[in-house]
Amino acid sequence: MARVSTYLNFMGNAEEAFEFYRSVFGTEYLGPLQRLGDVPADPDGPTLTETEKQMVLHVELPILGGHVIMATDMVQSMGHELRIGNNITLNLEPDTREETQRLYDALSEGSTDCAPLADMFWGATWGTCLDRFGVRWMFNFASAK
Image (tube, rainbow, N blue to C red; front, top):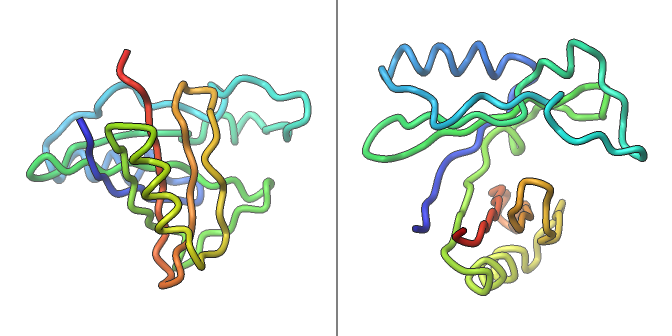
């Protein structure tokens, strides 16, 4: 089933923020909190410090009316910098690969700062773009198992 959620970026304090949001909304995480250290090692990728390995890779929390907020920590040693324009992303999870491609193609037209749709290690097709109006969109399609 398709859904839309809001994805938030933090500079190392995603877990603290989400513990606060969990107490405010009185809800529980949808699945376990995943850490950067859980990512399969990439021999061509960066080496994370022990502190960075404990940072949040992904977390999901329902808030109101079925809406879910998600988050990750940005990593300064990887050149990440939190700023207005990359702190909030609208996450689209369409029902089909075709609809994912259609939405990506339409929203990325005239856009900048794009990551093309690609198959990812978590089993989904993923991509992102900053549209021509400055809104960041994330696309995440996982076929039904």
